[in-house]
Amino acid sequence: MVVRDNRGRIVLGFTGKIQANSSIAAEATAIRQAINIVNNLQMGKTLIESDNLKLIQAIKSKGSIGEISSILQDINMLMEQLPEKGLTWTPRNGNLLAHEIAKAAEIGTLHHNWSTQPPANIHRIIRNEIQFD
Image 1 (tube, rainbow, N blue to C red):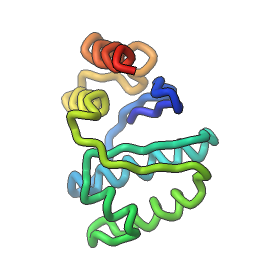
Image 2 (image 1 turned 120 degrees about the vertical axis):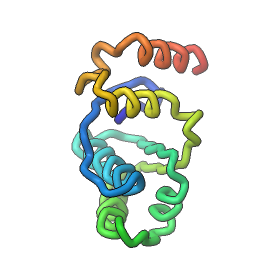
Image 3 (image 1 turned 90 degrees about the vertical axis):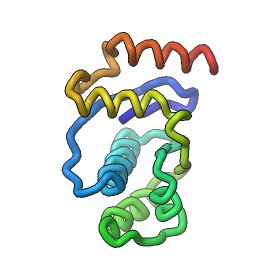
């Protein structure tokens, strides 16, 4: 998970295992965790990105997806607590950092608090993102 401030700078980054029966359930759980973190840190303007279009559409429309309906209800309730919130679909190629972190975490090559001392490949992506700002 990557938490950035309103200028795009990384404020917090961490990884963890999510127990889920499907990729959409894992993504929904990650979004719920992100919203909880944003609420707990009392962050101002917030934009949460996901590369799962079906999930983003379900959240924005307050729709339901059978296997994750309770998670979607939690997300919608938590979103109401964020004064300046946003939720957007970002294609995977537009969210390279999150994709690379997830991949490295899955194969076990990324430590829990990677944001303080990112590995070379992650550091390269962060540096490239800064150059495009």
